[in-house]
Length: 158
Image (tube, rainbow, N blue to C red; front, side, top):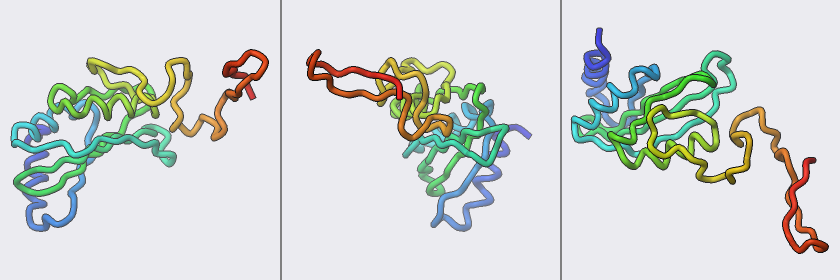
């Protein structure tokens, strides 16, 4: 069964109770097909966020996209991926997703394949890791202090 038929079948079966958001778990290779269906039905992307799933070793990252579909209400799409797996960008379908993709890349290190602007947005460019990954210590890697003798900020390892 194609992802289009599967998605539309899944949507039709959930029409009976439209007060709560519906959930769909998808693979990274199906992302573009799903979001093209959503865009073609004149629906909007309300949010895109990422988090690290510490209970799963094979796919530790989950990207969640909240969609407001005009004809059924809210829908949440969960995409799970591994550390090395890339997710196709949806910024060409929903331009507002670019900011969220940059934030997810910066904080978790998830790479969005084909993104036009995948730069750091919240951390400085010299930062080596991604702060929301569980491998980063809560106190960080370096300490930044003000040095009165040189009248500047200096960074030193803990």
